[in-house]
Length: 116
Length: 108
Image 1 (cartoon, chains in turn orange, red):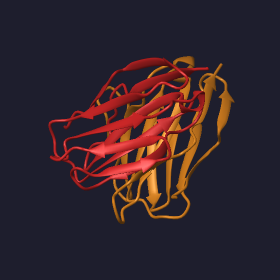
Image 2 (cartoon, chains in turn blue, green):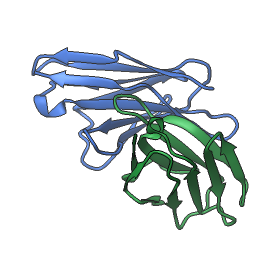
Image 3 (cartoon, helix red, strand yellow):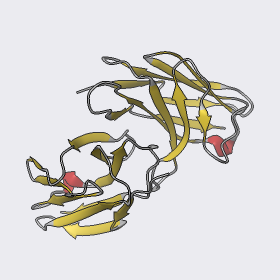
């Protein structure tokens, strides 16, 4: 099946620093990618929809200046958490939609962010 | 914005029991996907159903797509502890917002 990778798988940073998370579709092209965050024991919360070559669409309540998304190619989207604070600590998951066939969505393994 | 509702939200059963999880919407989908997420990992695609009334089997898991392509069910036979996880459904085309999902715990 289609594979989506995320890097890094976990990161610990100091408050005030910025962290970049990469999401790659390894064997298919993805015009659209999605970014989610997930708190313990909860479901996935959609943060933004990322379209290749255009600006991301952010969900209500998600600060676009804090969570910068770049989707510069059909296989790579990045999420940068700027000036991270402890409340940004969470599990961040990306997914990529396979534009061909059934428009199936494949998820990355997630990135655990801990802000000290 | 279409809304996908799953039920039940929580389910705790003993190993060997059967269970059914439901995914309902007022919207019609071209296809519907089921995922399972284990703690600390990303969701994994289990199946995609496309045709109204379609039934797909994956070992002990049986997936059915409603005739009107608005709803789906997942039936697990003889559940095992390895089935524990968060089950999510998503419809296509769709905005990829998930509901609460169904959190299944299978006790040995």
